[in-house]
Image (cartoon, rainbow, N blue to C red; front, side, top):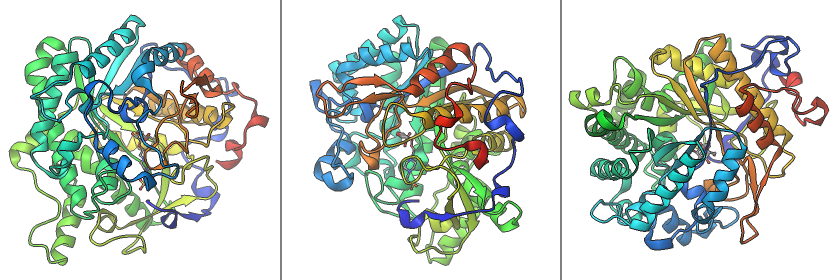
Length: 521
Ligand code: GBH
């Protein structure tokens, strides 16, 4: 879904969205059930380097491809934004930690800026002040009793590596592993939970298959799959490196963070729509998850078969989806100690051979699924974002059915966007209802879920949307040089949840809610 032209609104029969949950459970706790979580359940909050740090050229930092691209293309975002200052966390991390403490969460997920540590991308030169910045951040967190969860790559590739083709170049696998080694050496004594790569699907599909995200390569139908393939290999090599050389004495865990919209059949009694939704889930989540988490390994059969046959039909001598060797399949299988999952929203799915907005060849065309939004679902901010809490629970169950229940899921991101304001009743409601669906997945469906991280600590640079949409639990005043941070209502609600390990549906009075979810679902 890239432009509003591709987001058709449909009013489906309400009955089709009434589903897993019974009666009153979406709204309140009058049924006497305590919606609580185990004492050791990990509650956390997430951020990413490029979106908050600023300090784009501070103290020897190299340029990331997002720095370079946004400086050259100010028109990329509606507000001509860039990450030069962002929320200025490079200078204000101590204030950030005060906020994290206030939230009562015991985990903080942030990402390392690769070019801050390795300005040229390669490991021959380490930028000391950049390395020291994260050391100080981690030490400060530990003093506050907050466990760091570190993402190695959240999209800000060093520009010199992008100049070599970024993730379309197989050599990136080596450069990523070298960078991972530097990070394990620098911080592995105190960082015990690592995630290698954030949302490879969003990164590859939007950045290599189109110009929606930087690097804006627009190699549709080819670039997405090269990027996916080398990112998967890079992940596996980094995992094996840790397993071999670090795990024996550092005793940490390494995983990957995958994203998934939930694909809901447009009409739940139409077999074609059911098949389309399944196909979508396989192409967008399965493409990455199957090689790592399935018993069989490799890409999902349906994905392999469709791309191979469509490529042949299009006169390609070889499939546009690269193949793994036996050895690579083996390396990838089981290469994660947990399943990092980012989830935000749900789309309605139906089968389609061709849509106006699709390019050929492309991943959209290979998938053959049309995405629509349900016009009954609240749409509080960005174009791509509607609220459908039950999709969260269905997604957990899909993962359990596909890959089993042995590997724990950690929700590494979930949250809501709007256009700002500190009385964010809708965000409070979003968190309560998505957490409620997660509660049902844990308690009714016995899904193995270990932790939950809210996205995000504070308003930030939201990629294509610049600073125009807001996801923060704290507001940031981007007009003030101090980048003043202020608590939103949702921060208070979330901090109560993290403290009591329990959802409080009465935190806000029903009459203050714009969207009456009980009426909607
Ligand atoms: C996550 O991505 C990111 O990890 C995080 O950095 C980001 O700030 C957060 O979510 C909130 O956006 O897919 O064609 O419809 C979410 C990925 C990328 C999903 C853009 C929606 C819209 C274009 N989002 N995408 S499309």
